[in-house]
Each structure stands twice: as C-alpha cells, then as structure tokens.
Amino acid sequence: MYGRYGYRRITGLLRQEGWRVNAKRIERLWRREGLKVPARQPKRGRLWLNEGSCVRLRPAYRNHVWAYDFVHERTHDGRALRLLTVVDEYTRECLAIRVARRLTSEDVLQQLTELFVARGTPTCLRSDNGPELTANAVREWLARVGVTPLFIEPGSPWENGYIESFNGKLRDELLDRELFYTLAEAQILTEWWRQEYNHLRPHSALGYRPPAPEAIAPLPLRLTSVCSSRDADSNIGTGTTTGGGSPALPITAPGLRQPVARFACVSVPKVGGFSCFLV
Image (cartoon, rainbow, N blue to C red; front, side):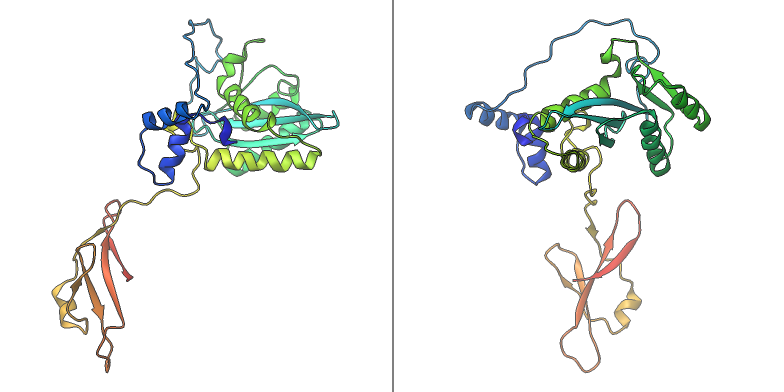
C-alpha cells in the first residue's frame, strides 16, 4: 500500500512515528531514489452545478453530509464483486465497505440502518442516480428517518467528489494491487484496508492526519508543587527534585528508613485540576 503514497503522505507517516523531518527533504530523497512524485493537478474551470453537488452544499460538521456509491471488481475466476462504500464528507472517515456478489436496494437499506443505529443519522445523504440508490423504498425510508437525499446530475460524477476521490484511493491502493480468489478474502482485505485508511493513513485534506486516529496524543503534563503546609506536617518526608525539575515527595512508613514510594502532583492544563501518581 505504501508504494502508492507520495512524499507528502510519507512525511506525515514519519511525523506520526516521531521523526522531525521536512517535506522538502523527503521530496529530495524521493526524487533521488526515483520514486513516485505526484503530478500537479491542472486548473479546472467553474461548472454549472445542481443543488446536490458537493460544490453547492459543502459539509460543515460531522454527520452533516454522508456520501455513498458502488465500486465494481472481480475475483480471480472472473465472477463479479460489488462494493458499497459510505463516507462522512466532513471527517473523511470511511464508515463502511460492504462487499458482496450482488447488492440490491434492500442491502443498501440494511447497511444504512446499521450505520444510523451505530452513529446517528446524517442531515443529508449524497449519491448518484443508480437504481439501487434512487429506489422508492430507499427514498421513502430516508424521508421517514428525516434524512435529505441529494442526487447529483446524471453523468456528472465530479459532483459527488468526496466519494469519488475515496473510491479512487480504494482502487489505487487495494483493488488494483490485490488478487481476490474468494468473496471472503475480498471482505477481509477491504475491511483491513478500511481500518488502515481510518486510523493510520495520513490524509492530505486533514493536515496529513488520519480521519479517525486510534488514540489522541495527550497534552503535555506540567509538574508543579501544589502540596500545602499540612502535608509537610504529616508523615511525608522532605521532597526531592526529579529529572523534570519538580518536587517528587517520598512517602515513608513507620519503622522504615527508606521511603516506600514517591509521588508527584500533576497539573493538567486543560482540566485545571491535579492528580497524584507513583514514580
């Protein structure tokens, strides 16, 4: 998968691992080794777009606009595969990739129901004019749950740019590079790629951060001396300075010469309080 990344995305991965590197330095190394350098995108003129276009209605918050579409693939024996992809346009997170031999409007409703229960309902749902997505059953069900469907102009996939961009990445990084022998293999590998895309892969539109990182880097903790004079009157001994420059106070026990543990008071800037931990 990394073989299809450009130097900017590799720079983002290196920074996630703690490397302090500059994108231009990675670009020089990229060119010197003869690796892929993404070409500049040509300028495009403004188009006349309908109300369902991603240009006319841009996502403003999480669960504002979701987009979904179908991707076609084949297994090694030539049998067809269909993939239903769903993304949140604001966070760029891939919410689901459903893989089956055939997908109908009932499968679409089942997938949307699972997502609505797990994540809540979006305000709008953008799609093209495929028969599975414009079926009366889908329209009526969306109206009942209070979701506004947005349909792009027929033959204008650029009006659904978020999902089309995602589908291009899916094909470039997975479908064109893997040979699927069975349906189960395709389901497992696409789900693995979805998890990698959401939690690890740097996204250029998000400042080269993943759409849904597995863990948020904690705020740096500031060690401060917050112990009052009454603590000094207790059986806590004299404080000593730790490597961070803040006092770590030893806790002594009756009959022992050496302290059994030391604790430091930690001030969390965002919360405004403090807590103690053993060191």
